[in-house]
Length: 264
Image 1 (tube, rainbow, N blue to C red):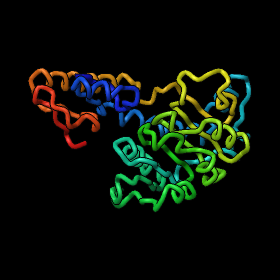
Image 2: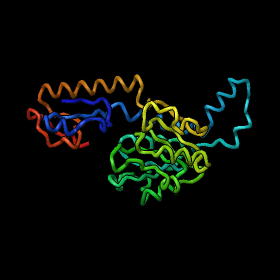
Image 3: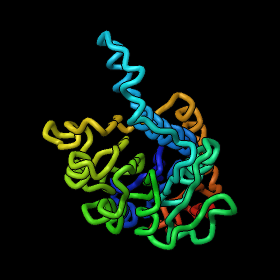
Image 4: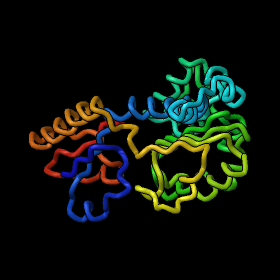
């Protein structure tokens, strides 16, 4: 079997696995909390001009008043979550704790937001109504460049875009243009289409974008949790027990009569 330590499997050759009857299992454990916290980190850092404030102090300045007119609070804002899976739900619960309202768009999870999260009628409705848009969907051909010049045009000028999912979801040229032209307040990105980015990536020169090197789930706490789950699944395989979190595209395979899907 192949046991992945994460959840994104777009780089695994599933057809080669199918030809050899090799099951592929994912590891969602240990991911959700870290990514959700990082999402909130990016939002708050953008809203409070964290990097600008810290940099100014280190340069001998004290901008106690200068940043106030362009700083904001998460309280009272509307967060639009695209993709209400494990991580999307964790992000929503944390935003609610800050006093934000949350809406979501997820055609695969209709009516699953409960009493506290509002379902948007369409992606366009969510983009138009949100102060913050956060991406939590997988990298699929259908989702490639989901955020592009057209969809960016639906967002409000004071809006913030957050991407802690996959870089291929965003048209980086279009995003850079929107940021430079004042069409967006800012963007927080933990992922890029090319990692590390090329030196001429237009986002690197945008002042109102925060970029971190794909570290949202990269914590010591997450590593412990992941490794326990990974080895537990490997042990299940050796004992001919039901495997957890098998890639859906390979769920029909039978490997030594042990392969099954846990329903996630």
